[in-house]
Image 1 (tube, rainbow, N blue to C red):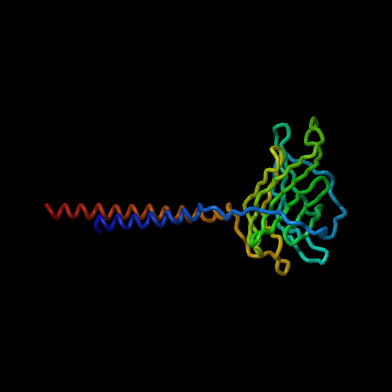
Image 2 (image 1 turned 45 degrees about the vertical axis):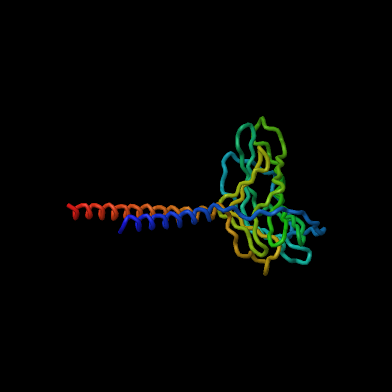
Amino acid sequence: MTHASYHTALLLLLSSMHRLVSSLASNPLQLSATADEVPAIINSDPPITNLSQRPVLQPKESIPPEFLYTLRSPQGKVCVRASLGVEYMVRENKKKYYFNVNPSFTRVRGECGSQKSVFSLEFDGGHLEFTFIKEGDLSYVNTVRGLLRPVPPCKNCQTKAYVGVVNHEKLFKAKNGLSFQCKSQTTLILASYFGVKLVPLQIQAFDLNNEAFGKEVECWDDYNKRMIPIILGAVAAAVCLIAILTYVLVRERRNQGYEQL
């Protein structure tokens, strides 16, 4: 192998790796959101009568139970479908406390609209509300509101309600007819002292064919977890190839030197 051919192969290899890394670092599509009016449709799955007592905060977190929730219109058509586990996080006296939502004591309420839908998980002592927006061929969550009224976590703690909101965002974006899925932990900071974790998460509003989730749109964290081992493997293979090419080139130069002698 000649010196010129070695450099040509090395440049081709580095160019291919640069295109791969650039494609992984590309940002998702950004669009501006506009709110549309929502018809006065309020309905849910059959109400639950045995609601739990006030939430009790725990000093240690645990994996929240996952459940499939659906919101239906008065005609019985599913307009929002969500499979998720919900864990609340609060900060009180410089300590963190946690509460997992129990699906057995949770009900779904909201509003179904053609351009905007509101999906709320409600339980005794709190709720978590998602506002979905449909814009063109995309749908996303524009607002997330949370409320928690727990039993005071300590003797000296006052009874209080923790309230927070994430507003004017474009969360969980997916094209119409597709669902957003994230197996990784999704953390939403609703206030400096209050937030929620959603794990795992699959959610869709609008255009649910046969009341089932559409094809999944992978979240960025899941994509990175899947692609990073592939990238590391490609880098390791590239390093090995460069070492082999370098060894072959050095060996050829030595042989040429021996022949001249």
